Amino acid sequence: MSVLVFTENWDGKFKKLSFELISYATKLAEMLNTKSIALSIGEVEKSELEKLGKYGAHKIISIINKNLDILDNQVYSQLIADIAQKEEVTVIVLANNNVGKALAPRLSVRLKAGLGAGVTKLPVNIDPFVVYKKVYSGNAFAEVRIKSEIKILTIAQNSFDLIETYNHAEIVNTEVFVADGQVKTQMLEVQKQTGKILLTDAEIVVSGGRGMKTPDNWGPLIEMASLLGAATACSRPVSDEGWRPHEEHTGQTGKIISPNLYFAIGISGATQHLAGVSSSKVIVAINTDKDAPIFEAANYGIVGDAIKVLPKLVDAIKELKGK
Image 1: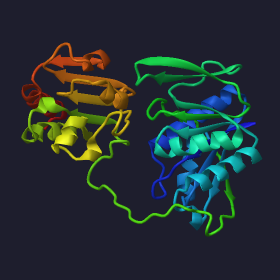
Image 2 (image 1 turned 180 degrees about the vertical axis):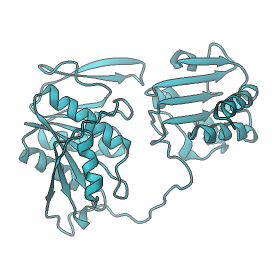
Image 3 (image 1 turned 90 degrees about the vertical axis):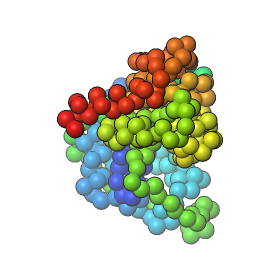
Image 4 (image 1 turned 135 degrees about the horizontal axis):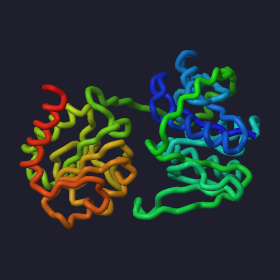
C-alpha cells in the first residue's frame, strides 16, 4: 500500500507545483500509515530528482524513453496505471492542471477508481475516505466521500504549503517498452513564451478589467507588476476588445489560477471571472462601485477609480522597496 504522485517536469526541471504535490502526498501517506512514491517521466538529472526526496518522497521512479517525450494521454495513463498496480498504490495524486485533468479520468476508468477533482486540503477523514473541495465556481464547499479501493485526487495549485522533510529517497530507474506507433499524439510546433512570468506559475498576479477604461492606461499596472515580480492578467472583456493578449485572460473560459496574491483592478467580479481566480489565497480589489461582486470575494478592497489609485500604489511600492 502506498501513495503515488505524478510529478511533471519542464525541460528537465521541477517547479513549485511538483513539490506541492509531493508535500501533500507525503502527509497523506502519513495519515494512511504508508509511504509516498514519486513518478517522473522524462530525462531529469539525478540532482533534480533528489529534490523530490527533500519534500518527502520515500521512493522515486524515473522513466526515460524517447517515445514518452510527447505527452500522450492514453499512453501515459496506461503507464501510470501499470505502475500503480505494481506498487500496490491506494491513492494517486496529480495536479489539477491541464495534464492532471486529462489523465485523471482515464486512470479512474482503467483502475475503477473514484476521483476527487480540485481537492484543496488533506482528507477530512480516512475511513470513510472524505475529501474537501470547492464547488459552484468557488462559491461553496463540498465534502466528497470516495468508496473505491483506489482513489485518485487532483490537487488545486497553491492550496498546500511546501513541507521539507529531507528524505534520502531511493531513485529507481525503470525501463518501459513503448512501441513506435503506440503514441498517437504529434507535436507539430512549439511556441514558448519568454520574457514574462507565466500566469500559471506566478505567486502574484496583477489583473485589469474594463475599469482601466482604455488600453493606454495600462502603464501603471504593468509597472506595478514589474515592481512586485508579478504576472499580468485581464478579464475577458479586455482580451475580447484587444486591449491585452488572450493568453492573459483569466476566468472560467480563460486560465484558472491560484496565486498567493491577486490584484483585481477595475474588475467587477462576474461569476465567470471569479471561477478562475477564487482559489487565490488573498484577493485585493479596486473598483468604483462599492457593490461590485468582486468585493464579496476580496480580502481587501479599495473603493475608488483605478486610474487614480494605481499611481499611488506604485509610488507606495517604490517607497517600500527604496526605489
